[in-house]
Amino acid sequence: MKAIPVALLLLVLVAAASSFKHLAEAADGGAVPDGVCDGKCRSRCSLKKAGRCMGLCMMCCGKCQGCVPSGPYASKDECPCYRDMKSPKNQRPKCP
Image (tube, rainbow, N blue to C red; front, side, top):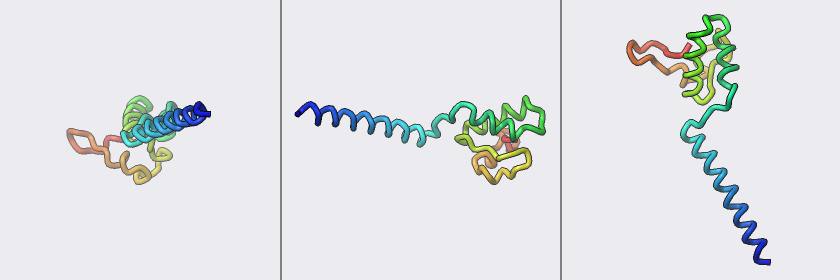
């Protein structure tokens, strides 16, 4: 009978450790799942030259935890992080 409480305790500890790992990733900005930024940036850059727009959009999307305005004409106000990112030299908007 003592084996059941010990096994239950180990199960609870493993579940708690997994939860803390996910919370830590979310607090650090965590990684955006594969394909999320690609699809959003393809939509955002659909009317522009793909190379430069996609590169900048993918970088901004990764730093903003997957937040990208919803289309080529969508307001950047949908994603404040995306909107507020500036280039280091001339303080122009970095994200397309």
